[in-house]
Picture 1 (cartoon, chains in turn yellow, purple):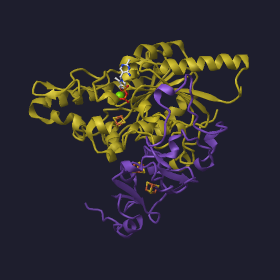
Picture 2 (spheres, chains in turn red, cyan):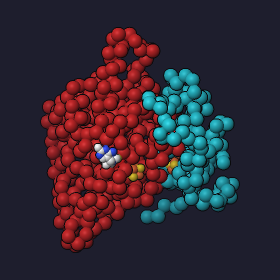
Picture 3 (cartoon, helix red, strand yellow):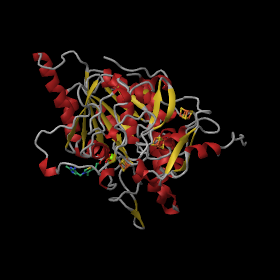
Picture 4 (spheres, helix red, strand yellow):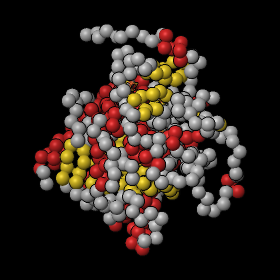
Length: 317
Length: 149
Ligand SMILES: Cc1ncc(C[n+]2csc(CCOP(=O)(O)OP(=O)(O)O)c2C)c(N)n1
Ligand code: SF4
Ligand code: SF4
Ligand code: SF4
Ligand SMILES: [Mg+2]
């Protein structure tokens, strides 16, 4: 077992990247920031499964791969299936002593987008979590089906303009609330579940390391700002993510063994959600007078959720 | 094509898509793209310049042509905080032994994230036109900005 030092950024930066450049993700895409951080958190061997989505199609364009580890691409539904089954096979072969190196530490990781995690691969994810494999599932939550042109998913927040929930004279965009995937995964009784963000690199690295070290199925939802579909300048990826965590649109917290909740980041100044919404083209229409009620609804949902998280943390159960 | 700060002879030798490929219908079953020639174990403990990258590793490719603006690095102001390293989405900040050495211009797409997260005053990274020589950019570096209250 070898996690790497995350005491400070200088020490963290001595790691040798295992996710290479010249992948084809958009300039400023947060997916790769998150992947790099995961891979720099450990020097163990990694077996990574990615299902279809921006990350997969952009990092394995024939004849190139950007992965310096074992990496499996599988259909849209099945990142959890591939990682959990590879883990089962590894355990069986280890037991039989038929591995090339029986002592080399290996970690199993699955990456899926929100489309595959919240919607299309949901049943397969649930199955793998319930079966209790020793692996970590990381959702790159950019709140839409980015790779196919920005369709709405059940991770898309209310009010966002997407290609299949369009804002216009008759609609303010998506009508339904974002699904609470973290609560659903915690309800599986998973030993470690968290929501993390790349702007808070240290809490993200800590959470990744906890998940890798914890035996059993761990789930992490990461906010992955998407410059193309959220419509902001590529240079602002970290700024937008700061706004996401400081308005509490994306609170950072972990849930241990399905019940013990710890808040991992408390903004000194909690910003109003308008600051976050106003910085992205996908919410521009909400600032029309007739859509004011949607912004009020989003703010009120955020306030209630924050209150709920704090009370659950206080309960210490 | 630049070979980058720590370029090996393989770096930046071709643009993605420009090389000869086996057609999709010629790929045989169970084919594997190896990221390295030879031994791939213990890669986490090898720096890029110590690795035996294969021709299939995107490390040997370049996306330099995506850029219209580029970050330029000013060593004199840098405090080696590594903000640029942790947030670069394209593994294009070259850091060794806790020191920021420079930008990998074969992999940098010119997003500008590194400039935004650089905390020094003036910044140690700034965006310039791709056409500008780095030496000229360094000549034009702005002065420290006064705090306005
Ligand atoms: C079963 C199936 N349905 C649809 C698709 C088409 N498809 C490929 S990628 C994608 C969107 C992926 O969205 P998400 O999982 O959120 O990842 P992102 O691209 O946003 O990172 C879709 C719909 C597919 N490959 N397989
Ligand atoms: S569309 Fe969004 S998620 Fe996909 S590569 Fe571009 S920025 Fe990243
Ligand atoms: S401009 Fe973007 S890709 Fe280039 S070094 Fe800076 S952060 Fe990395
Ligand atoms: S962010 Fe700026 S100061 Fe920090 S290491 Fe990079 S160039 Fe140097
Ligand atoms: Mg998505």
